[in-house]
Image 1 (tube, helix red, strand yellow):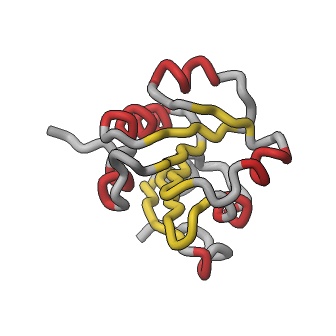
Image 2 (cartoon, rainbow, N blue to C red):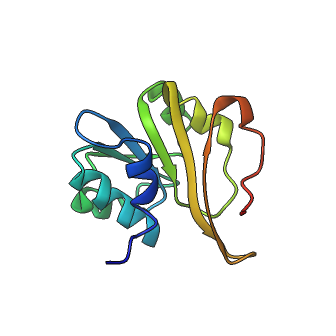
Amino acid sequence: MRRHHGLLPLRRWGSGPGTKGAVVGLGGLGHLAVKSARAMGAGVTVLSQSLKREDDALRLGASRCYATSDVETFGQLAGTFDLIVNTVSATVKVDAYLSLLAVEHVYVEAHGRSRNKRFCMRPIQPTDARRECRPP
């Protein structure tokens, strides 16, 4: 059985019943992450640039969906999540997403960067938030 990259960070960082997770982006990898986290029993929130795919997110198992383009989103969700899995290859403001984590929890970049064709999966702790995710 082939493992899907969307599931790896979820297992590694303890997604399951009672945990609150967020998936950034709802593309192919984001779809897998939402479905996998939900199947593992975690509460799942989708963070997307807009709400135009909210129906898809809810149908896939997310309980909530927020637009990251709305400035109030980050204040409203501060300190909420145990795990955030970023599945978008675009550059994001990591500091803003780190503010959404509960104390000592994990933000993971799990995506394929088109410019180097390698898969990147690396946890980021608040102390190294300004480092760029580089493939091995």
